[in-house]
Each structure stands twice: as structure tokens, then as C-alpha cells.
Length: 385
Ligand SMILES: *Cc1c(COP(=O)(O)O)cnc(C)c1O
Image 1: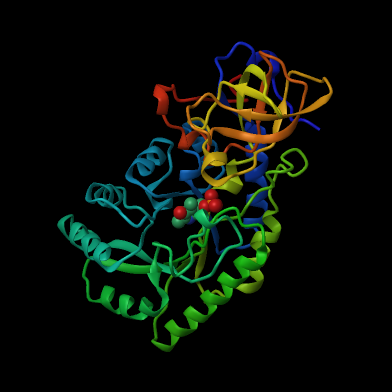
Image 2: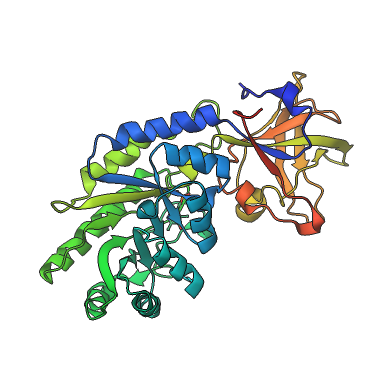
């Protein structure tokens, strides 16, 4: 089974390019809304770093999601796309002064703070503006995620967050500062997580931490559990929408919220990954000594996940119905890691055929570079084609 693509229209476009199926994006957002509407206290912020294409940001904003930013540039992109400051959260280990000032000027919902020195700078900058910054502490819960080592973030060895044992001292420290108000606790354990047990472990940890806060007569208005829900890269056609029910049910069963507390989520990949494909044209078929190579005009400059994380993406030849043959699908960049797939089965492929590299909506276009003086890929939506 292959995906549905407007191949005729594709023939008129310069390759490579990203193609976003906005019907699927809207279906995915509907599925999220259906689950979230069951819980009054739940709020979802889209993690903008997965894909900041302005056309997608608008659709996501229209669906009512807030935004989770990790840079001043992302805050600017969100403001442009119409997100109100009150729905923007801002995380990151290294926030520059101009980025903090931008967040203060936009009266964002919350700064997710990752160290005491950062807290002090936010306090100073807020004071200079006569404002009180709303902050949450990002705690490192030392919970592993069964995912690629490069995308686990919640282990004690990772650079992210504040150690759990420092939670109470840090809260006490913040109390003495006049221009910050602690409103939440923030966590994020990693990405492409498919084992609900990992999120369950996070819930158990948060329950312990909240009990400890209570012993010190402290509470927070909200808990933010980050993102990380994975998608099915093997079966983009069979499983186009992630299992949001299992995800939100895990939190509703395992996490004990205090009365009046809200629960915030920061989903990135699960929102946008399946709606995007990288479309590339086959330049040459090379018969190597031991295998066939399909050399295409997209490279890791357009989609770096396979080179960076050994990530798997399903590839389909969307212009051939000939018998299946195994190819290494490789790009033109002068690096041996510029390989999209090894020995993957495609319909017999010839020069000029279009290939769709599937599930590329997250951490695809946004991570593109101009290495080798290449042009950045354009992103088209199904709405506009
Ligand atoms: C990257 C990131 C997310 C989103 O992760 P996904 O795996 O794309 O859902 C959420 N929160 C924070 C703090 C992040 O760094």
C-alpha cells in the first residue's frame, strides 16, 4: 500500500521538496482534541522545533493548541502565526538575554527554567521592565526512555534540567526573588517514545516529587510533562495517526494532580511527522559491484534524521508500479552518511522517477542546511497544490 499523492502536480515542481498533507494534519489535531476535551485540566502546546513551517503553524494554532518554543526565533515565528503570548511556553538550557526579553515583552505563559543562574537573569531582566516572570523549573527526573541515546533527555547524565534533590532549595531560592513567580514544574524525558511504561515511570516520579513538595508546604499551579510520543515510521499508511488515547489515558490513570492543578503537554513529532513527505527525483540508477544504488536529488541537507540518528523512513516510488527490487537510496552530498535507506524494496526505479520519503514532517524541513551550497527545500501543502 502506497500513500496518495498528486503526482501530476508534483511533475511541475522543482525537486526535492516537502509535501504536507493538511487533511491528515487536521485529522491528527482532531484526534488530539477529542482526547484532551475529556479532561478539563489538560492543555497541549505544539513543540515548534519539530516543524516551524508557517502554513502548518497556522493550522495548529487554529486547532487551539498553544506553542512550546526553544528559542527567540521560534517565539517570533509563533507570534507571526498568531499564537497569543499567553499560550507560549519557552524552554531551553541556554536562553540569551534578547530571547528572555522577547518572552517578557510578549508576556508568555511560562519560562521553563533549567538553572539557578538562568533564574537570576530572568529575575533581573523582569525587574528592569517592572514585570514578574512566570517560571516553571525543569527537573531532570532521571527516567530513561527506550529510544535512541541521542534523543533521551531525562537521565541524570544529560545536560537538561535541575537535579531532583535540588528541587526544594531552588523553590526556596526563587521565593526570595521579587520578579519571578514559580508556577510550575516541567519535565521532558525524550522523543520517539512508544512504550507507555516510560511515561508511567515519569508519572510515578512526579507523584513522588509532588509529595515531597507537600511536605515542605509547597504547591505549583501546573505540571508540564513535555512531549515525546512516538509515531509508526514503518507503517505511515496503516497508522497515520498516533495512539493519543493510550498516551493521555496513561497520564489520567497514573498522574495524581492536585485540586485546581492543570497538566500541560508539549507534543511535536506526534502532531506533524506523518503528514509530511520529502519528495525527491531519481537522478541515476547505478549498478554497483554488489548492489544497486538509486541516486536521488535530495540529500541529508534536506532530511538529516537517517544520517544523524540512523532513523528509518519508509520510501515509496510514487511513479512506478513495476516489480519490487532492492536499492540503496543515496543522496548527492559528499559524505558517506548521505544514505536514506540501505537495501530497501522499491518498485523498479528509473531515472526521473519520484520517490516519497515518508513520515518526514517532524525534524525534517526545519533541520535542513545549505551544506555544499545547496538550496533549502521548499514546503508545499496539499491545500495549495
Ligand atoms: C523537543 C521537545 C519537545 C517535543 O518532543 P517530541 O518528541 O517532538 O514530542 C517537547 N518539550 C521539550 C522541552 C522539547 O525539548
